Structures are given as C-alpha cells and as structure tokens.
Length: 214
Image 1 (cartoon, rainbow, N blue to C red):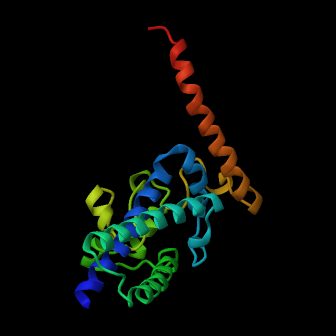
Image 2 (image 1 turned 90 degrees about the vertical axis):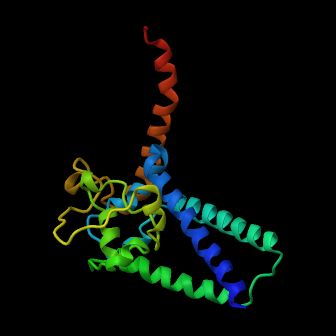
Image 3 (image 1 turned 180 degrees about the vertical axis):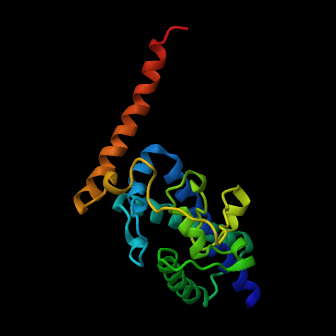
C-alpha cells in the first residue's frame, strides 16, 4: 500500500511545486507578467497577510497552470503504472495544503527562521524574505513555494547569512514615497497600465528595429 501511495504523493506534491516554481519565475522575468506580480513585492513590510497580496489575474494564472501540470503529471503516473488513485491520497493532499498555507504565512512574517541544512530541501522564512528584498544582489532568488529543490536545480537558490541586511520592496526607484501601490485602487489598476505599457514596447520594438540604418 505504501509503495502505491508514496510515488503518487511525491508526483502530486513535486508536480505542483515544479509548476509553481516556473510560473513564479516567469512572473519575474517576463516584463508584461511582472506588471501583475510586482504588486506582491511592493509591500515594504512583511506580515501574515502579505501572502494574500496578489493581483487576481496573477492568481488565476498560477492556479490554472499548477492545476493543469499537477493533474497531468498524476494522470500520466496512474496511466503508466496501471494503478488507481490511492484512497489516502486526497486526505494527504488536503493536509499538505494546510501545511503549505501555514508555511506561506510564516514566509511572509517578520520571523527570520532558518531550517539549517534542510534549507536545501525546503524554503525557510529567512529565504523567502530574501526573495522580497529590494537589493539588486537578492533579485530573482528563491522562487520555490515550500520546496527549494528546483531553486537548487536551476541555480536560483540563495541561502542568507544572519548578517544579511536588506530593505523590503521593489527597487531603489520605487520605494518609500515612490511606491506605485499606496492604495487599493493603485494596487489593482497600476499593474494593468504597467503591463499594457510593457506590451506596447514589445510590439513597437520590431518596427523601430526595421527603421534603423545598418
């Protein structure tokens, strides 16, 4: 029974983590999608509620991709091994979801906790706080949800030292009084404007290149 349960649980968990990692990474590296995700990073103080500070369009993208990828991975496993879903799996995933939510609250708190050697397997609150750093040296690090495995595999893992000091927020030019999300209206509207501006620049770039002289 455990030989049936273990691979199913690992595929479901790691499949969702893999999808979350890459969606999260693309939200940072794609300038249009960054417009929707940067509201999550414009907060200059971390609290238990910061994890819910997300634009609705960003949440829709994350949930859709994670569900499709995780479900497809599980379907391939069940079909390839010719087995049915283990009856304990739904409850195990429900409990895991509660633990993931707890970890999210811890990640977005002011508690700077490290897991020691287990930082190479799981994202600690100290590691996720680095992800919210406004400092250039911390940019695009620690994309994982609860697991740091894929950060380690793809070169984005950053394990901070206790002496690391940093500000929270977007960057040097969008912090403090220059924060673009000072109220609820700005939080929901500004990302749409930012993303549309980035999209317009991307569309205009090929045309501008064609007019340049060799």
